[in-house]
Length: 503
Image 1 (cartoon, rainbow, N blue to C red):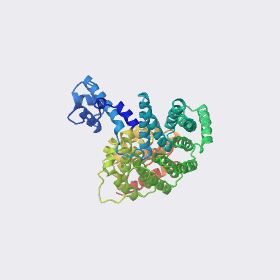
Image 2: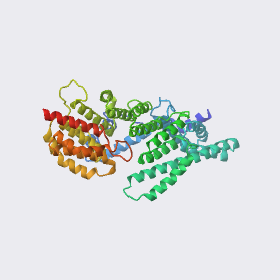
Image 3: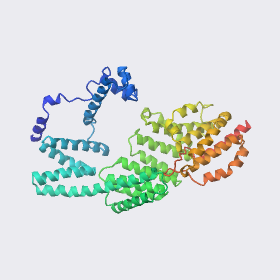
Image 4: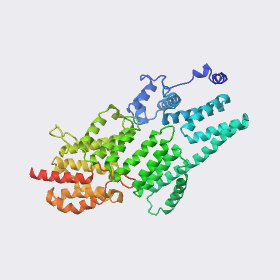
């Protein structure tokens, strides 16, 4: 009762009446509601659009800016009340949000001199932050409790109890900061265009050595996440895929010992294993792990679609075109697919384009006698791919050229040759686009050699051997994104050239 009296004293009716939440005045007939729903339904993309829609006024009118501020304030106020019917510590993500929210309440209560309520809440909260290994919150809360029992209430037993946890949290927090620093260093090394990176690598290896000394004794969730990301990133650069698999298995073993499951971390580790098995040519294992990764996501979330995408992609590489088509049809037909992020939507549109291509080339049986797939519409629907000058851009260029061949539209193919040559010279000269350079060079020769299969085979034999000297991979060092392996695409090209010649 003492705590309830303290809280009610902070919240008299006069103050409660002044609380404004987003649910109030959210009718679409009000300006506030109209702005809310216009943003929710993607009817406006900028302040200019919103101002004109609501006030038919100049961009960023005073009335609009005031309305925008009021909406922002109400949304922030309402954040504390979302998911109120969800178990507060049901999973890692929900627990993290609620623990931070409750710690904010602890500090708010302390600032209002409601110490009894603050300490009661802090002690109950500490049980959850310890369970879920929220190291920063562990450190902050144990500091508050240690100071309370050491300076105010003078309880030596509780002071020593929280002091012990505080010291452990400080050590764990330092380890997490070191791991985050290493991840930043390796990220800066990758984007730095300088050829001489010895000093950067020296700093990285120094930090990495210290992290190796901490693992596995330090095994908080955040440390494992940073540590596995930074080490796998380095292993990927040196193509040590067996090392990535072993690292992921070691970390997964530690994660499995915990009283809770961080599905995001487990998913991330499985994706690392999946890509590594693919790069080792172990497609069946990669497919199985993609399915395992899906099991650690909620259906129809972004990560679920990513794992499903990879499974579909690996089936295409395995030439299980029927299986890939089934996954595609089952996935993009769902209503949830309309909420995909723009880039993930383009992933699936590209898979769809290649599946349609396989139908045109007779690799997938279909009742439709003639493909109605519109190549230009597909190109317009993948603006992000178009802007990327290396890997994913190649996937778009290739599928366009392949449709021209499959439909015997040689004139359109010829029209693309000069632009294709310029593109290859400008953007595919780096080591990380080796295979893309090879296939684009070969596709250029197809047009130059007048689409004659015998001549094309003779003049691209060396190029094909060069292409096959490096296998496709998913790694930090590769910008190639092969929806269908380039060797398989090339075989389809030769088959179609023979077929068109006979017709």
